[in-house]
Length: 268
Image (cartoon, rainbow, N blue to C red; front, side, top):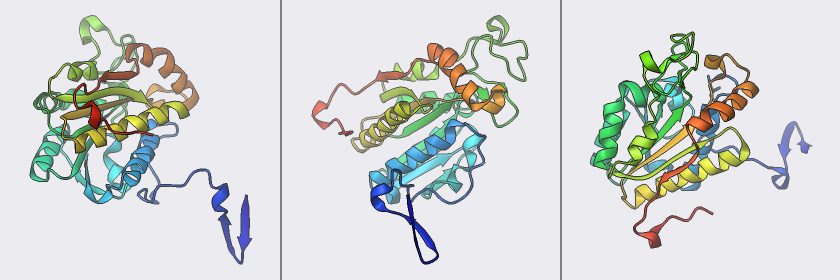
């Protein structure tokens, strides 16, 4: 309910259900309707603000649909060459060990051109957070097949569907990094429903708090949709994701810290 005072309208504080994070800018996001990037941006900004680390966090923005994330969240950013975000994050974290450092990458950037940087950073246990958006397709460049495209899934470069015999199997990069000794916390989540948004927010918050404890690399995959690349409406894309992406990329924790249980972060 709105009240009018003079020429201004305002919402009573007791009626305000959701308050926009002060770290989100007023720039209009360029994402397609229904894209999971915008929701992930929102919860990322909320976590940074709620944890009080806005002046101590540095994000790495590489090439992909989310390359303009630095226009939307008002923190320090460094843009990286395609696929090199973990290497850049490594350098920044080593030079500024007291800062919170994270990358925000798509499946093409992280699991194709950046596979080496991803694997080796995780294997070394660099004390950074890697946020991985997996929509199974190259959304920015025209809907081409990605390393994460499902078997039989159509794309602009696999119009008859991904043929595993000639195109290989999808790369389950999260499963791989979970086996590496340098990773501390590895999880796969989504943002397609309110309950999943809450779970993803909890996971990213944990990852930032584990970084403070210097426990190794944290890796948060977010299975998302690409309505434009999939040639679907947002509603159709969410349903297709539930029926096809989640069985192949099941949600949940893959690796959680076993030691230092007394220092586990609180996430209430």
